[in-house]
Length: 209
Ligand code: MN
Image (tube, rainbow, N blue to C red; front, side, top):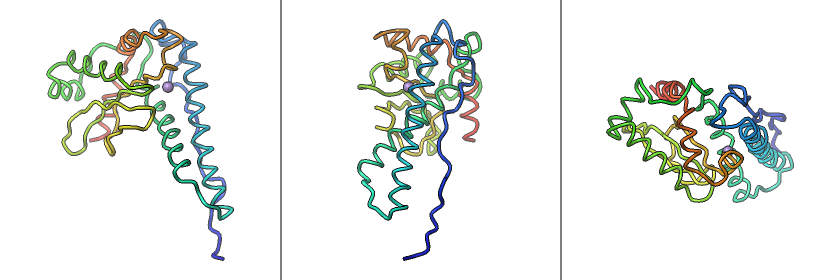
């Protein structure tokens, strides 16, 4: 048997803290809604992703086979959930600090692609409200054309445009808004526009160079 070089106790995923107090998005998103969402739902994806890694590591330690179809599909779902939520929290800012219209390079990019911020807001909101089942709306920038595209993600991992970095996300899972808005998606989307953190979206965009 070949020498075993498997490294035990590799790095795992961790739940990042919210970048603000959980009540700071009120009245748009309540403390109860935000705490549940972060502490329970996001946490579940972190634990799920780590459990998937443990399944892979266990199989390697034991020289056992891996059920790729099950484990890799589940990992895609859990890691998608973790990464999208990690983008979502800083994508919002405390009430009074966010909302309005974007300036800087993001404002220019949006105007060039959509003609106006209002048109962009309408298209993004519609993409969010029409996600089939649970999912997300995301704004990405295509590295080939430099153009911003709206991506509609089902669950956490379906219909992704590969290799297009995400600069903004909106969680449209029921768990994101049900405490505050019941089944009223439109009200939740309006709430998001009141707390969206354009500085962070601009920062992510500029990071892409
Ligand atoms: Mn969520």
